[in-house]
Length: 568
Image (spheres, rainbow, N blue to C red):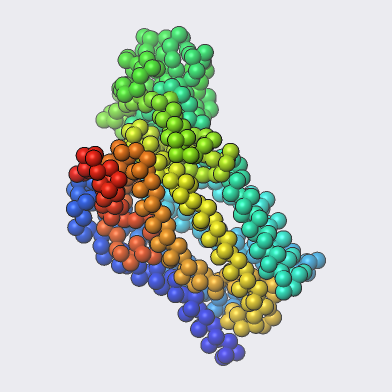
């Protein structure tokens, strides 16, 4: 009917508001690429690094624009080619025993189709875009496993919850929205406690930060793919009773390397025969006792007591080429390895652990456990965060953070993260989310049976499960509008957490600023974002304004200290 088409166009224009705004902000962002760097940020990049940052920003922008166009074309084509009534007829034609089952099939098909359409873009982003700029560490097998686990969680957790919501909406009439809201809220609250202990370890190896000295390999150049399994690895010292050949030894604890014979571990130990028959420190596959392949040797080792020492390694290039499936040259040395060095740095993680626990207790963040996340198994990007409540509190450091920052810088960053908890930012965000969810489900109760909304999607008879899907499509515009003040609030929280860290210790202002600069440089962050893009989507303040705020608060709360001239 002509009236339905007019209504559909009007609703489509309304639904398109967030996407159109996102397009505009992305084009404005692109206009700032390569512009002059603020004085506060000069020196973070040299000229070559700045050009790489600009190329990375532009590549991500191109990707986002293309993906958004594709998603929009697919969605609106499905809508105006009357895909919703067609899919409704398909599901009704199955003659399932319950409307709940029909709704599960309907929503399941839409969800599965969305996931399948998303996978090619994720593959390109991970294995092409991020790979090109040296960030990707994800293997195809890890990529597949993560998606399988995601689907399993959706089936095990999402399907029962969706059944419950549909059941309340169908069976309890006008009060269905309230029962659905209470169910979702209860699930969210349980999920807050379960996630750190159960969900996160499914996707990330969470390694308790041990005492002792850790050995960390340097970041291998992205042009050396054959050696990626040796790049930025953290080797943890075994306990004294776990020494090998009378000397300390170190073992990786992440799931990153799948070797030819000895499994997912690498070890550094004193090997009596090395690669040339002479005793030497050796980097080998598997446990020290396993007799695995020797990938590199070093004549000077670490005493396992003091941090800061460095070890330079001589590669067994044939072994490295063999495990990476790359042919070696006639000389027995694979070409990509000739100019590449492997170096390990000693890091006193025992001292870091003690000082982190002392900091947490001093700030009232009691009972926290400290874990290292094997972020390097997926990406070269770094992060740190605190999660959980009560006895489920966890301080989490990405393993890529350990070689990047000094101990003091890590402490300053964690002072910031603990600040989010002690200033009740997490609690406030959870409370705001629950209140917004109440409003959302109340609106759902009013419009789920709306014939006007159904007609806008060319459906004549509204069904509960269809109304649920269509409502959230239309409500996405409200989501977009509400997200803006929440994003502004998030940036304010970041400033507040910075202030909390500065107040915790007089040295943390300079250390926090230096740590942020290192993080930005490592991640090739865009230093000249457009203000409109920042306003819409940035959960964290731009680095220049953030550093200026850190310097000013340091001056206010620690006036007797030497003021920060630059964050180095």
